[in-house]
Length: 71
Image (tube, rainbow, N blue to C red; front, side, top):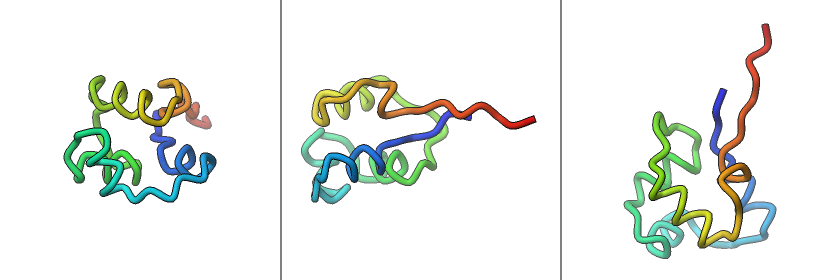
């Protein structure tokens, strides 16, 4: 399973930034960032990943994580 790790990244960095402010800072729609933050995105647009990685100074692997399904 692929999951967004945006909430954990923001928490671990001690960012007191709201997702609305983050959306403004990276020039993305609030709803897109909200879905990314709440891990409800179905697709992860590369341009959004790029903007978030640059702003947060993280790699895509820190922003999106892979959790193997338990069988």
